[in-house]
Image (cartoon, rainbow, N blue to C red; front, side, top):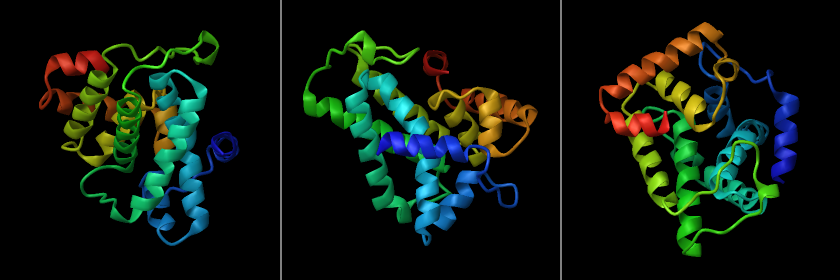
Length: 203
């Protein structure tokens, strides 16, 4: 199921709708409340990013696929409670993802050793302080909620989804220059409310 969504997302890349300057995902969120097709498109849009984000933190493909499915089950159940005035959809879905990863480790009670073949490029085992890292990332997301939505979106895509600035621009439907400015201005505002050590560790 996860791989099917990733393949669909790759085929749809660059064709997501933009309405009145909003991000593609914002338009889809509105449509997804009443349209099964829009709901599927929304899930397909985020599936590859959520999967990669989880894989880097759990270290093996099987668990990453299971957790990705759980994340989207929670998205489907809770979509009607999403409040765009409180958080961007990007930060909302990454918070759900972090909660699922944390629950996964708490259920297991320990870190699972994985083979090198199961790691993607750039991925690292979670390590003994994994839960602490996840908790700090959640704190960072909470702080990001205090930023304007356009900065929340840019920072979530750049640093949580691990996108390049060009990919952030494509996802948000803006120019690369505009995307770069949003990231930098978002960081400036975040530094005004977050401790330097927290930013240095994750951004």
